[in-house]
Length: 61
Image (cartoon, rainbow, N blue to C red; front, side, top):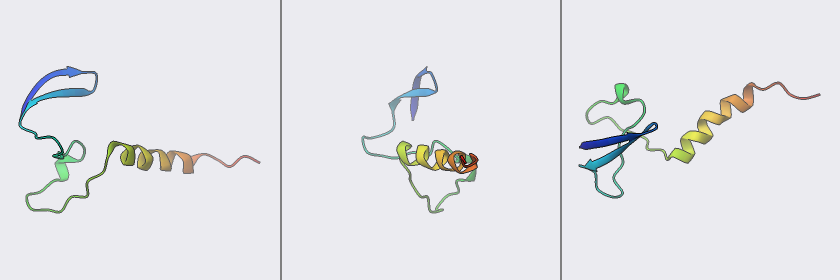
């Protein structure tokens, strides 16, 4: 993979990934060869990360 410029927290990928391919962008330290991976979209990760924060808020009386 050839990485180009950074734009905020995003990187421009110049070569090495075809349209529709998925890559690991979070939790890469846990990835092992031939290990199964459960792919999630950005929207799914946002919902997962927002859920614990919503549960932590005290209920209004």
